[in-house]
Length: 82
Image 1 (tube, rainbow, N blue to C red):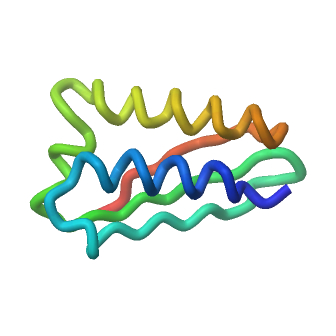
Image 2: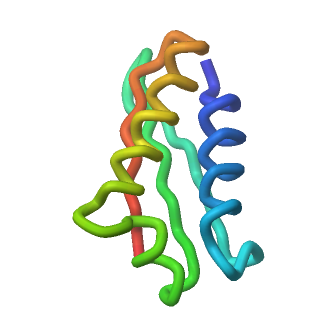
């Protein structure tokens, strides 16, 4: 269980939101037997866009990542890091 689908989905969704696509970095790390954490980094100027008003965009990204994790039988957490 690698989180490969989660990585691809989160990278794609974030790349469609930001201006500086070259600054996107998504690392999916194991957090136990059946859980992963997707760590998302973007350019500082794009982080607000990724989080959205009241965290709505971030919540949507987490929901999509969770659905992708379901495909792999994984529990997914998404962290947005500066």
